[in-house]
Length: 100
View 1 (cartoon, rainbow, N blue to C red):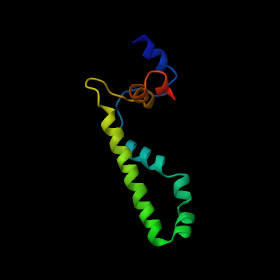
View 2: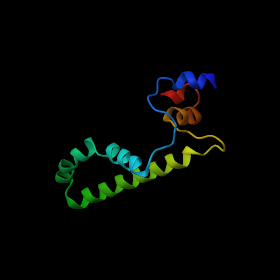
View 3: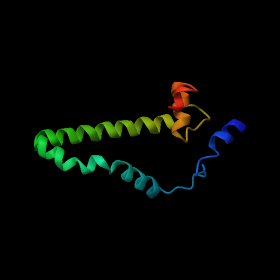
């Protein structure tokens, strides 16, 4: 328990679980809106409408699948919740490699 406390002392947040649904929605939108959205006009101009829409839908499907995997892995071990990425990484890849 003490080891986890030392590891988590630097974190600016707590696991209070007081978030509302719009916090999560805002976080998801801000995570997805970035360089990808800024380069979208250039990509569509280069690819054209047909291939551009196909690639856009394909990237949406990949993003949705990744989100689904993360939700499933959040509580994959009975009695343990992976609230932080490093916890999930350590469980999946081991104590040392999981931090990278």
